[in-house]
Length: 477
Ligand code: ADP
Ligand code: MG
Image: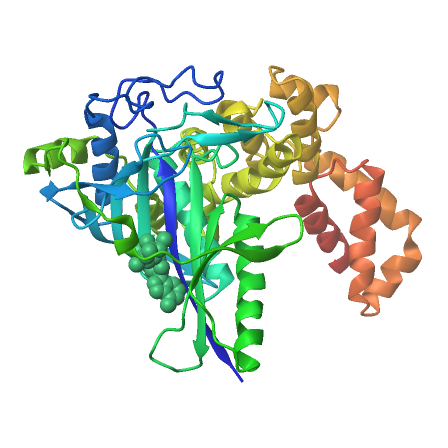
């Protein structure tokens, strides 16, 4: 029996503000427990929430970036539940009237574009966290994170495989960093996904019952958790069992999911409008101002790279995965290097070095100007591509060395003097009469062998194109 997979994702994006959603306490990560727990975070009686304007701006930025409707009036609501890390007894969120509605994000799957619809994005606050094992036999509560501004972004159930889900999550992760609303740090919990998964018989129009995998903070976990969950559900259904809606957890150590609690319904939370907060009004004027400060979006930059620079869509999308990479690329192009060669160098040699050293391009020791110079030396045939890799490695060690000096120091200057090459070719022909005869009797391969001999005689420094040309001329006279 064939099954359709249906996935919808809710992502909690921590907004990049200095202070909390409803108070002036700091949101800095990693401080002493409770050093950032102000009276509002502690829910002292009588304290009142004051909305963080910057968080609202972030939500508007997101709405603009996903071509969404930005509500002129939205409402904060109390979501009531009891948990030790939530001293108020409710989380302030948005329920019926969220600030962002009906956006979309385009993802590319096997070369095909697919649109994922964003149902809504709403502002809310994070909870604190329980600390186990710090005080013997007791659970500590750290309220530093309580009240941290979040934007929860909810998709329609539009994804139909683990790959699509991961591609969407990556794209969203890139976008929120690109527009400057989130630092994207997944280890620190700045970007966490709840993934809803169901399966149904192929072609069925009615969706199956979903189970929601909570709090996935790595793309690898998203993939593993969905794969496991899909199999689990299909096995149950094929055995004639039924799926109960549930909230589940993924265990990265075992690669398995397990039920955390049966699914609560919205009405379990007794949502109601928060009487301490006025309706949030967003004016056209506010939106226009923010529009002016928006960067060109990655999809549009990628399209320009394809159209104007002739890059493949893969290269264009890789080069626009984050703004630092895009800026680096643009900075190299200022020196009038070939876009294709530049793209290959950044996505190939540079990316593999960055990955090996586990650093981002902002810490790349080789500046765009240096890379541009290196590429120019390939383009003007001073060095071969292989030699350029050696120069690159040396440069990585000694980043401020002058490239021409380095080329000479390493003895990599390509021989493009046709007189010198002529002489080398002559010598090789005389020393390899057999090969020459093989070539003349029709063995094409012998030609490459002769080129190889000349390259060897030049210690790899002869310009291979010139070697071929001169050799061909001499052999066909
Ligand atoms: P809640 O907040 O209670 O989890 P929502 O109605 O906001 O519920 O939906 C949460 C997510 O579940 C959305 O991303 C939605 O696309 C997704 N979803 C809804 N129904 C299904 C389904 N049958 N299978 C997979 N995902 C679903
Ligand atoms: Mg949910």
